Length: 332
Image 1 (spheres, rainbow, N blue to C red):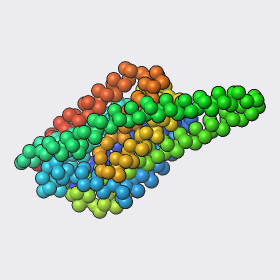
Image 2 (cartoon, rainbow, N blue to C red; image 1 turned 30 degrees about the horizontal axis):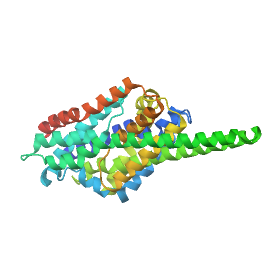
Image 3 (cartoon, rainbow, N blue to C red; image 1 turned 60 degrees about the vertical axis):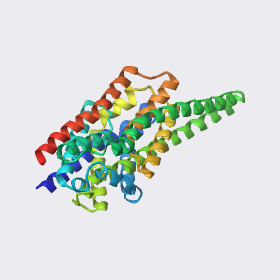
Image 4 (cartoon, rainbow, N blue to C red; image 1 turned 180 degrees about the horizontal axis):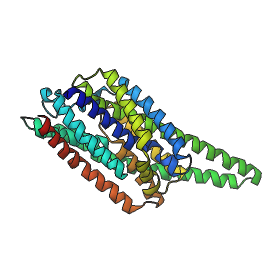
């Protein structure tokens, strides 16, 4: 019975993760009116699917980290009751935030779940050194790094586009019109590609974290776990992405194509690097940080919405930890 309940809860977490995260790569595309919501959602779903499948090959380190090993004892990390508490705490937190329209971090919720479940069920103390170095530090630094890099990238790309436009305007009008049209089309192509790369990178980064709940407790093989998690993420994103999409695309920052490309390129690069080296960064934190960085450079931020989103991030870990603690006590 506990195994069936764990399997359901882990897949519900994957469903909730997809609802909160799948669209984030295309938030800048919809926000800049480059694509309709439905078309952006289709591309986001396909890229997430491909990223989830690819994760089987390239993200073993994240599977090990999010099994709980190194944070609590190996025996507890392999226990279905522990995984159930972790999944339950994270799933309830993420689906609640999704229904409220807040783009929170599933990674952050999972860390909270690991801490809460560990406190409830472990007979020894949690390894605070590993918690800080391997989980908290990457989560805290990644949004600041992405915001800084996106700020710089936006200024560079804007300057390049401005110089090309001025050069085109100095030529004959008919030549200038053709010259101006080509960079716009090229920018759109880069924008779509960068958005696709974020959704792909997110699939690579998040699938093993969620699959770890099933793999560590031997509910399913690694390949089947990753495929089941990927499928649940795609379905969740298809059905419940809209509210979080509106927050990221329309409320945090008034995006244009230059901002979108700048934010997406930084987000994709950081998330893929983190996946390769087993660093548990949050795609949400990196993506929102990048959007904030471009908005700061362009002077288009809605600071009240930024404040609300950051407050939801602060609340994520303690809420997930509390729920996981309660589930852990009940399941022990």
